[in-house]
Amino acid sequence: METTLMNSQPIPSILVVDDTPANLLLLTGMLKGLGYKVRSVSDGEFAIQTARHDLPDLILLDVMMPGMNGYEVCKRLKMDDELSEIPVIFLSALNETADKVKAFEAGGVDYVTKPFQLREVQARVAAHLELHRQKKVIQESYDQLHQLEELRDNLVHMVVHDMRTPLTSMKGFLQLLDMVEGETMSKDGKEYINILTDATESLIELASSLLDVSKMEAGEMTLDLGECNMIEIIREVMGKVESLRGDRQFIFEEPKDPIFIQGDAKLLARVIQNLMGNALKFTPDDGSISIGIEAGETCVRVYVQDNGPGIPQESLGRIFEKFGQVKSQQNQRQYSTGLGLTFCKLAVETHGGTIGVDSEVGKGSSFWFSIPVNGPAEALPVDSSTANVCAVKS
Image (cartoon, rainbow, N blue to C red; front, side, top):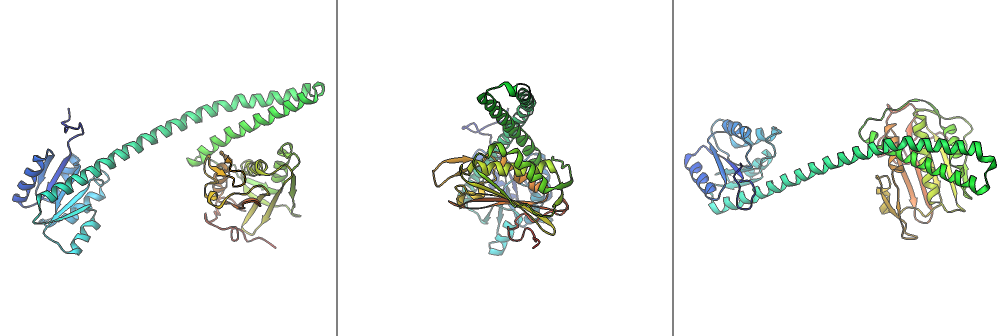
């Protein structure tokens, strides 16, 4: 059973390294008198071996020693992953600023000049031991939190994965019910079926997005690359969200020539659908949503623009965060962006592209993404601006 101090914390272990026997005797006696576990060695190589054998919580290290000096010992310690976190306090008769700077550059946390005052050494030792203890506590807490996050993510992943199958069945049976019984249903009954179908489809999309976001964050998403007709993809998406349009107006100025890229058609369609769904959520009933596409020499730029309330400048940096919250200045309501925009960001970046938003409060928002024409191999700079993302053909 490990011996502990009166406060039930493990007794700190200190390694003292000095080639002068009198200094070793003085420091060892003083530190043991304070209740610390102390080991003492007289040369640098043996100090490293001793530290590896039983990790100390702190090292008091003399600078001027035969063979390997204190600077070299400290550098060796910091190059070893197992030893690098041990704080090192230098003890030296050298008191020039250059000597102290050299000690800190080697990785030391403090520097005490000889002849040293015992009370000063005691205070510095106690301070750095406490800092080291707190650092270990923080690291242990971080590790535990990371393990809990992994456990949570695995549980959520399992639940969502198992949930998607019955949701797909529900959607299929609702569609079948509409086909078989649709003609005999009342107008209200048919509307209820459509609402249930749309809601089920939204849940399936949410489940798929959550699973895909996890894959992309882990770098496990494999793209099904092929030739994509981007205009056709936009048309298909507009058809899918038509039932959600209401009295809003869709504006799509379709280019005369087809625009093809190398990409994952299903993934890109979901990106555009998410951006349009986001625009529908924030566009007033009598508003309009514009969809545009611009072909450049090396990339293609797609945008979805609405005339909703707009996004405050201070919120733009959080708009693509997972489950981010954005506050409207007009009605002071908090809007959750959920997973949709996070999915869009990761999907676009997986294609080697960039995504962004331009917005002004009271005038609406324009979400855009640019992806390379020839696929992810021609990745775009992450911080490209809307002005230089594409060299758009005139």
